[in-house]
Length: 206
Image (cartoon, rainbow, N blue to C red):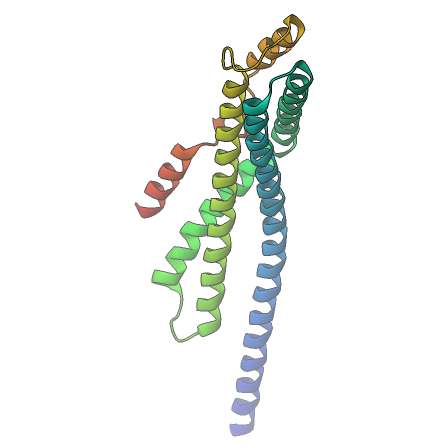
């Protein structure tokens, strides 16, 4: 009887260890998947933002037609990059934002109400998920909103009247480009900007 109880306790500990290992592996795989996607999106947005800043500086220093052509080429490059990123990543960005918000809510709930405070492994896993979801969420929103703002400023800067001496052909190209309102969105439904940050914080706090 005592031996049977001893064996069951050993098995219980083994199962608990296996459960912890399984939870860690699943969390690690999900983290690697979402973090890699978020990192790629964030780096692409950072690159677009950097290009926009260089374009603004180039416009300020442009005095010849050759320099103006380089500025317009840079502007068209930014537009094409944003269009490609929007086409390929608008739905993954939407799913990442929704999943990260859901993960933040659920992990916060588990940390505060559900998690057994005596089981440190569960508490650590829930806290790690909360941190991961928060990082992914804010990285995506902040980087995309920054890229959208920088692209809009660069676009207006290039169209600033009298700033650079434009030929007729260059003016036609810029007019066509100005009519295309390209921005980073969530599934082509919601433009990613600073208001989304306020909405996310308000929803999370409530």
